Length: 283
Image (cartoon, rainbow, N blue to C red; front, top):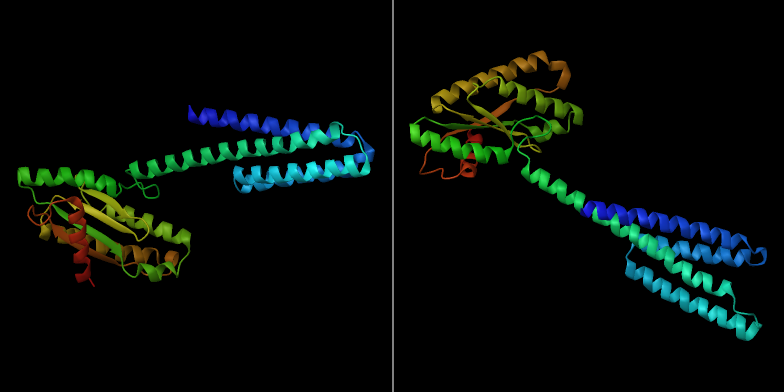
């Protein structure tokens, strides 16, 4: 409903601005003797409208008050000193200049409202999204939901649960050596490689997109997780051999692993934090 109202205000403002331009052009062209004077006032009206668009309606109102005061002084001079008559010419620009400002303010207001609604929708979408757009992997929000369930299952059925946190070694240096497209392809290739290295009942997550960090929840103990680690590193070596011309750099992994223990890991975020600490030992 709010979006519909903003659209209606914007349409009305455009129609008002179009009508004001048409009327002003016709009025300016009707009297050749006052053509230059009308052109000057028309440019002033447009200038105030443009300033209003890029600033605020308050600025536009102040400029309109100054214009009315200046134009009133000019009219008084023509009437008293020069001896001219007050006609429609004297009233037209006093009315049309605020009309231009009003139409511009309505356009600005509706545009800013639509932008605010769009930003709100994008913010809500990013906070509620559970899948990374580039890799189609579940993200950190989804990890927290799943990890809570997996941790409860691990306690209830006494099934060992281990989290692997995976990063690419020297990623900051690699970013400077290859293009943005190659970086995206590398992340996608590493995601596919990781996905094919685990069982169907295990889960893979993209925990950090900016500094690529993957998380693997494995229903296995620490020795079983070591087998997955060895498999991952072996497949990365195979990828480096097969795609040596693609990236021009060697991709190597560092992996931290931690087995779930109720006393030391109360929350999913603690699970990630402790697994990341283990990265320091994989050099």
